[in-house]
Length: 311
Image (cartoon, rainbow, N blue to C red; front, side, top):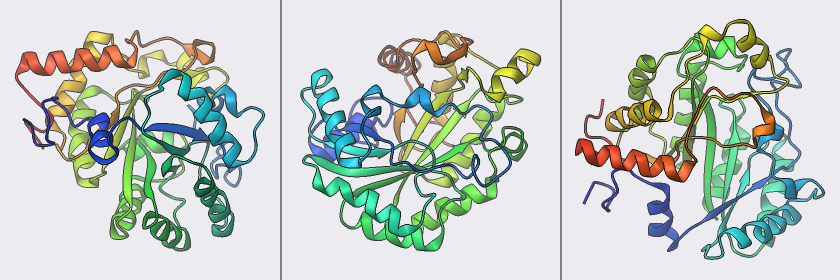
């Protein structure tokens, strides 16, 4: 039995859902029509890797209001996972705190009109959390499960500048501190493989992830999408990009988990999008379920677990 209370060798999101909701909770992506300041109000043209359409489910195409999107999502996932114990409304597209607080309230409160919605997950940037929004999110968190997912992406300011993130590492730490002060649950989103970075740096970065103290974390390998600035950069300077074989990625993730706080719940280890969106297939990875099995097999072979060598 490991610190999180079961025999799995990492603190799995499925365990969290069973402990708090009695079983599987499916996230339902929602596009509430918000924009991203990195595309609209700043002259960056968006992050160099961004292709939001790659993560937009087909069932959202003809639905505008939040409630209709959630009902469409429920119908879609009910066929794939009929044993769900409920759903989280996942405000995923772009920056979901980039609007006046009255509009945020209007959009987020719609979830209460939909049956079986157990909570809200809001994806945003660390530089889009003004005090009035934080105060509203604090109120919302007292009425339902709420997780604010922050796009950390990298712990290196040089990288953040290079990929046009438009915020600094110091801003990231400030955002998490403000959310923690209001007892709002957080998720850190990280990308492995951004140009100029190497695995040795990422293993050192675990110290900063542990300092952030998110409740949840999502790991994604870098995916290079068509018609993005990063596609052009990769074509010009492929040597700046570090990719893995499936076996190498498994070894790296196990090294990472061993250094990571056992309190952090792992939601994902990799990302999957339809191949038609990819400009480059530089990672030959397994499907996520198979990848998780291989990670657990390697941790068992090592006789190790998440947090064994916490840094």
